Length: 325
Image 1: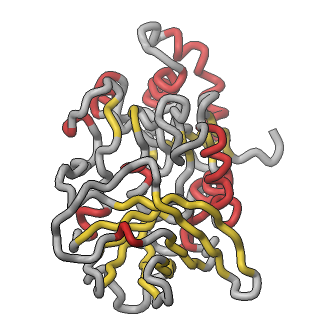
Image 2: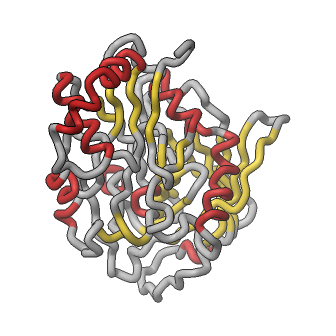
């Protein structure tokens, strides 16, 4: 096949952010043997199937020369593994016979979970968001809408800056003593007090494992619990609208509070994020960010004339800038 470099496989319920698929694959020499993807979030699923397997729901890519070799032996190969389940399982068995290991890219997401993806998408790893899966199983990624409309809403931000979608940045409001986590294009969360970046970059367990159990040992990555303390509950602001300001060459995103959840009474003597009814996030598109070494974006709290509106700037960190109060 002329001008073909890669074959990408996904399930019928896999959503690919195509620009980011291209960004990931451009790092690799397509003339070599590459089998690229990611494991499941479920530790049990990975044990049952294989940690060496790229899960088909999250999607995976095979370089053209590797696909050529696979085509020559695949029919005989899969007959040697009648007990395996699924095409992705069989592909990995054939890769093992070819001696080609899985090259892991954590932006491919199987999402073998139930419930709310907020915890996972609000603390995305520092890598491009490549795929989403099982969106028919989890709750809509935006509240008070359907799954399809929620995905269409997310596309607002993806069209403006696909390279930075869901990328987390962390900053602090020093005057009000708040910790702020931004998942660009999706959600902003404000927490009272100082929560370290080490904690904030860990997903909160807003979801259940694939067997519908709240078991923190069931995941193949670190998580943190959903707090029960009324003063430590995050205030969640979802992206309402995103637009590009041509005059200032920046994206303006407006985030509104989640009306679905009521915040419990807190007796701490400090400002409450409940007074914020709108967060404006300013960001310049950075399509070349993944051509540099990976680093989390920085964010800064900007002055605001209205106490009910918070302004944030998100972008490349200055020299020597770190996330601290």
